[in-house]
Length: 167
Image (cartoon, rainbow, N blue to C red):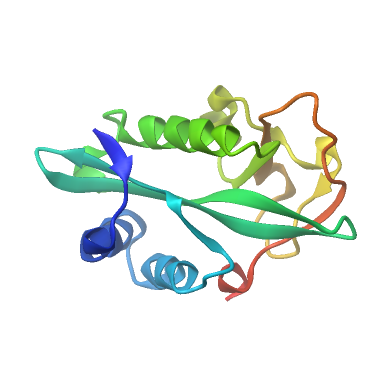
C-alpha cells in the first residue's frame, strides 16, 4: 500500500533510509529537506506500507534551473528496507510520484540514479533535453528527466540542487 507520509511516519522514514543506504547521510538529507518550507512538498512525500509497517519512502522536492528562472521537482531520495527490496515497493513509489507530480501540472520530474532502473518509467538523460547536470552529480548520464507534459515548454539550463543536496 502506498500513501502520503505523515508527521508520525518520520522515525520509520529515517530508519528506512538508514537501512537502505547504510548510515546517517541520507536520513540527514531527508530531515533537512523536511525542515525546509520552501523545498519540501508534504503531499509529494510517500511511504510504502506492508502489514502496517513503513518499508519504503520517497519524496519530491524543489530545485532550480540556473538561467531559466524556473523551479523543478526532483524525485529523491527513494529508499526501501533491504529485506523488502525487489518486491515492487520502489516501483510503486516511483509511479505514485510521477502521477502526483503530473496531477499538480508540473511538466517534468528529475532524478539522479541508474538509467536501467529509471528508464523503465520514461526517464531519459536530462542533458539531451537541455537540462545540464549540477556540478554535484556523480555522473552526467545519471541525471535524468521524465517529461510529464510533452506540450509544455521545458526550462533550459543547468540544474541547481537545493542546499541540502550540496552537503
